[in-house]
Each structure stands twice: as structure tokens, then as C-alpha cells.
Length: 245
Image (cartoon, rainbow, N blue to C red; front, side):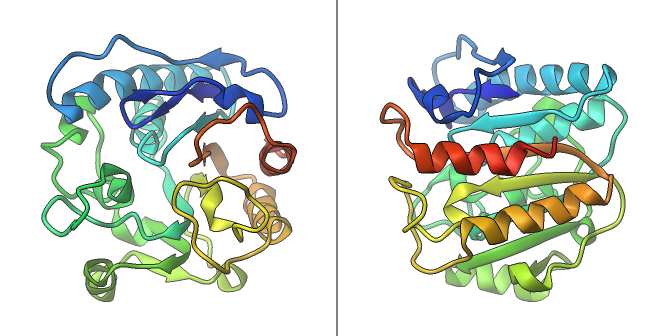
């Protein structure tokens, strides 16, 4: 397990308390002053190198962080190792905002849109990250979509599925799970809770189905909460999701 203890460019302390075991690796970096994209590029370049090294060693890395944008480094790392993954993205939110459409300015609402090729000048070019074709990315649940995200998905080849109806894309798979996809009654303290949603066991079953294909090459787990010293429910959920890898 590779721990990236950040929420965007903010260093987090205590996230490891929500892990079922000590991480085998931890990625930190001295981030430059100024532009947030430049800061994230420094951090995610290190993530990409660690992921590439793990894949080259025959591992299927699990990257755990405090947000979803670390997926940019994970995919860049897989590509550096010669793997061009499809992406299965479990999230309560769409994460397909863009700098042009966001009303909040929150970068954590953009990573899936960036992965499929929007605005490569922001960070993808700095990482050598090639776009994932839209038809090889699927969005699971996403029960809280902004109007701009609805408009984008209406014309995109990226398909949104309910968890029970998930169709698995072709090729090697990166499985990304933002734990806010689970009903917030089961996951205390998430930053952006959305009522309803699948149960933890339903998400674990869907992830296990993906792992059973033998095509999962890496997993991202986004613990999108403020670390508070550890929580047994959250720790058990992370353990169940990652057990198969």
C-alpha cells in the first residue's frame, strides 16, 4: 500500500490511522510556492514513479490518499510502466467539472475530466500523462452531479452506471474508489457527504467482481475525510476493499 497523506497540496497528519495496516510506502514532497498545479505536479510525479516501480516489480499497487486527484499520478505511473488502463470510478460525485465550468473552484471535482484529456496544459503535460479514451472510463453511482456535469456526460462517451448495472470496460483496469460513494451513515466524517448511495458491502462486492476478472492492475482509494485519529468503520471498509489485492 502506498500512502499519499495529502488533500490536494495540504499535508495531512493521521490518515494512516484509518488504514488496516501500516503502509509499505509513503510519498511526500517539498512542494514549491505558487501555482497549485505546479505543486501537485511535483507530488504526483513522485507518486507516478512509485507506482511504476511497483508495477515493474510485479505488484498491483494500492494508492491511498485524502482526495481523488492523486489518480492522475497513479495513471501516469501505470503508463510509465507500459500499462494503458481503463478506469472504473466509484464516487458519490461526478468529478468531471473543469476550470471553465466549476462554480466552487475546487480542483478535487475535476480529476476524471482531466484523466480523459481535458486541459492537459494544467498538469497532464507535466506528468507525461496521456489521456484515457472516454469510452474506456466509466463512472459508478455519481448521485450528486452539478448541471455542468450533467451536460458534459450527456455528450460524452464516458458512461455513468448505477452500481448494480456496472458494465466493465475492456483492457487492464484502474479501480478508483472515493469512499464517499458509500452511504454516509456507514462512513463517518466525510468532507462532502451525499445522502443515500450503496452500502459498504455493495461497493466491496462490485470491487471484488472487478478484481475477479484478473484485469485490475492498480487501485486508488480516496479517504475524503479529515483524519481524526482513526475510525473502526472506515478502517474496516478500507480493509475489505483492498483485501483482494
